[in-house]
Length: 118
Image (cartoon, rainbow, N blue to C red; front, top):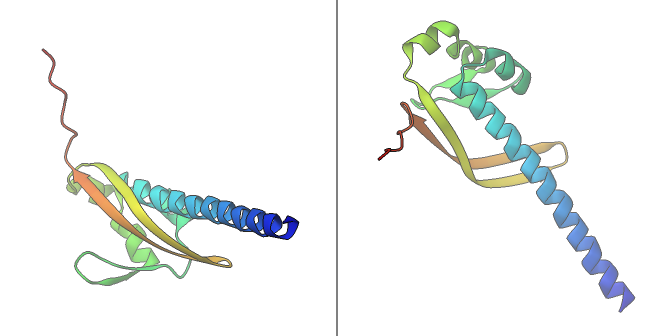
């Protein structure tokens, strides 16, 4: 009985640690989305690794410098206002010091709708 209880506690502890790590990884993804939404190049510089690459919405493979450059003050002035970027439905796989994260990202462009007052 004690052995079974120890195994259950070990599994529960491992799952709790894993879910905590997964939440931390998803929080970083949200920070990245927030930095993109606000065109915060300093935050992008802090969040993106030296070897970061991404596939753009049009299919281009962009390296770190190009990604950060896209979020310049000039680009912000020419872009439509993004009111929010919502990150949900995360799938996280952690392997040692690396994580793979797949999320649904919903970008809301334009000012948020105002509530009607009567």
